[in-house]
Length: 291
Image (cartoon, rainbow, N blue to C red; front, side, top):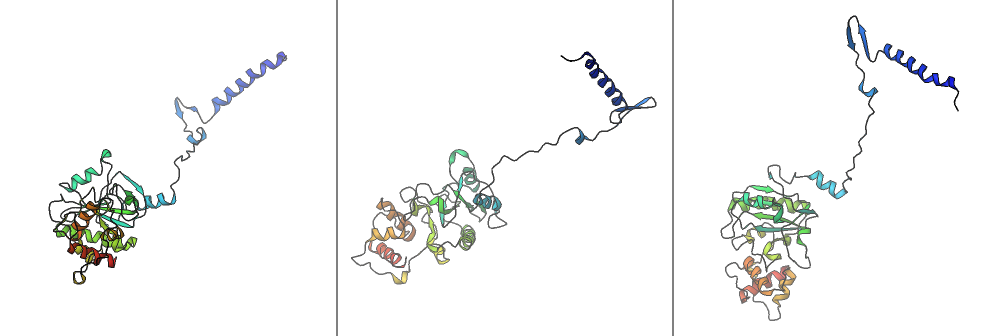
């Protein structure tokens, strides 16, 4: 048990503290008949709170993409943002036509959640270049496709959409703007000439873009895609296997008629029937020899 005299100690301490508090300069003191408030430094009564960042750090690849952001490859390119993509390194360029009626309609398509489709660039009829995704991210433009042994074209390609409904010619301004983009992509990523192809090349059973109006020869003359040499066309020998030639170039021949139509839409143009004529085979043979 505690001694009784110890019970007075708390009362004595409280009385002493109250006297000290009244004389303190950190509270309210009287100056004449006016009470003056003396400011107290806030950091003397509130503890500093340290907030720790709980967001995980970016990986090296993610940081590279974040750093590049939407800077793109041309300072004067209009910037928009698609919402469907993954990260990867490009080694192919896939050219499409939009099959829509305006640039803004296509941009909107790439910004709606339910569409699940996107492309890196969209080029208008009058040559306006719109970058929708950074080159280093994986767009969703190729869909179910195959080229050679590659079955995931989105993972290694850049998609370019040309504002065109599929029933009209491609204006010169649009093609020249496309050339500017292709020049830069080829230089930046060392993309081989043969790796500039169309959507119909990689998905012949599903797609027909770009249409027969697209100037593939003009692109090939600039180093984007392959083309045959008209001066060297000869009748293909009897031992020539056109199906193997189509496969070697890259076409998926599981649907042979679709592969032939895609080939002829690109290289023959004025005849897109599902049979190979002698002339068609001579073109294919020339490409096969030089591929």
